[in-house]
Structures are given as structure tokens and as C-alpha cells.
Length: 359
Image (cartoon, rainbow, N blue to C red; front, side, top):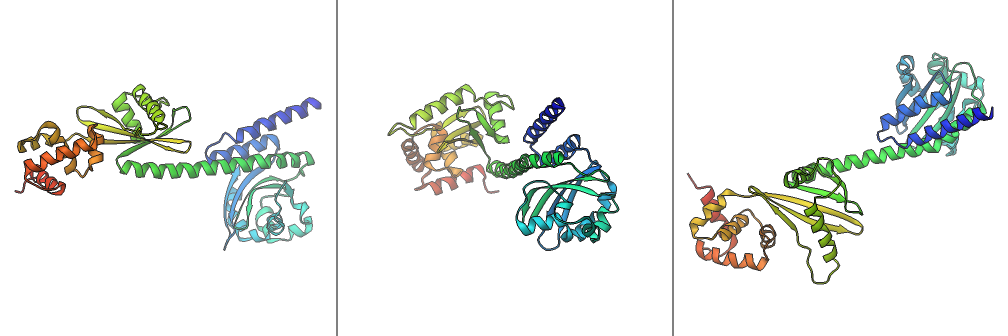
């Protein structure tokens, strides 16, 4: 007998621990309902999620699948307000522990209700053990264990009561994870539309999360594996130097600029309290820059004009070209003279007219 109790306890502990490993609500519900049948034999188990505001709306999962119960669900929804245990939860505000119908109503009283006659009676459910996972005035989620003949024992009630906090916490975890994933997906979509990439770093400077575009940058510029958590050596060395320089007075945090034949990638570091983020922005090297040399400009002056024509500020152009803003300013002075203009707007318009001549 002692070995049976110990084995049951071990099985319960393993089952409860496994609940916290699920990342999707659907998988959690399936594991919870099917696993409970191994611990507490029943005819079937059910998960019900009920929106109480206004006319009650009920969503349910039955395990094993019960087509009769599913077809009778509208009857349950119609008479939900008569459910004695749900009314007890709502009236008392207490929802700790597993309850049976007999805890809140007599058998004769319950069997006179329309809820019993039109839902539980046709299903031959005469014994039910039920536990709430979430009980708010507007929302209710619970698990129900259903039997035809054999009443539930106190040991079975104890097991379901012991499982309640584990199941409730696991449900909240999966919901929060789902919410975060949804928020993250929206954020990634926004970042990708901005033609930028973003990366979140761990305290050990490993990749905690990276947007799809960032993963593409890592592969194209450094040949990193798609699922790597390690920064490329060049990126890591720059990051460590930037973090060190951040604590030095008078030293600015310079971006990392990586360039190939067709494009240039600018990486910037943002440190917010204990969080570290890298922002990636790629610009295409414009072949039309060569055309600007027809104005009598040098290679570098043609590049400066090209970026200014694309709306970049002096500081942005300086970061792209890896020079200081003062150098860009001096280049612009010579560009204005060569183009016979007085400001960057006129210079940008003249560059645009060369690239897109009027027919």
C-alpha cells in the first residue's frame, strides 16, 4: 500500500511539473485533460471557458472527445446561470479547492434544475468534481471531471485540489507567452517595414532574440548560422569596446560599419538600464554616385552628394562614410561651389535632376 501511494505521489509530481513546460494554450489543455484521466479515472473530462458579461458565451473541450456533450453545449450555455458551483464562486468570491455538486446543493435540488435535465441528465453525469483555474466577475475557466456511477473519493478531491495552483500558473504562463509573442511579432513587422534589424542581447552578450531581417544581415555579412546565439567575432569585439568606452568620459559610442561591394551595414548599440540592443541599418551603394563626378567632384564628394540627395543629415552621412561631421561639412562646401548652389536642398535637387532627367 505504501509503495502504491508513493508511486501515485511521484506520478502526480511529474504530471504537475510537465504542465509548466507547455508554451501553447491548446497543448496545455490537451495535456491537462488527458493526464488527469491517468490520475483520476473518469467517463470524460471537460475544460470550459465562459464569458459572463451579457449573455454567457461558452467554449469547451472534451477529453476524450464527446460528440453528445458537444451537441448539447448550447443547452449548457442557456442554463449556465443555474450552475450551483459557478454561482457559489461568483457569490462567495472563493474558488480554492475542488468542489462537487453535493458541496453546494442537495442531489434532489440539483436534479430539478433545467441545467441537469437538458445537459447533465442526457449525458448520464451523476457525479462531478470541478476546480476553477480563473474566476473573475466577467470570466471563468474551470476543469470538470465527470462520472456516471462512482462518487469521487476524498483522495481524488485532494489530488485535484493540489493540482489547481500548478494548472492556474501554467495557464497564466502560456497566455503571457502568447501575448509577448504577438507583441514581438507586431514589433518585428514594424521594424522590418522600417528596413532595419534589431537584436536583444543577454547579460553574457549572446543573442537572446533577433528579428528575421537581422538574421539575414548576420548571414550575408558574416556567414552566421541561422539559429546561432553567438555574435560574429568582429561584432563581439566592437560591442565589448563600445561597452568599455561607454564608461569613459569624453568618448563617444561610434557605430560599427561593414561594407561590401553593393551595400553598407551600420550597427548601433543602445543600452537601457540592464538591457542591451543592437540596431542594424543597411543602405545600398548607389552606382549613380559615379555620375556626380561629372560635376568635377572627387569620389568622396560624389558619395557625400549621393547620401545628401537621399535625405541623410551630416551626422548620418558621416556615420555611413566613417568620417567626422566636420569633414562632411567641408566636402559640402566644395560641392556647393562645384554645383553653383548655396544649400543642401538645391544640391539635392540638382543631383536628382541628373539621376532622373526630364524627358
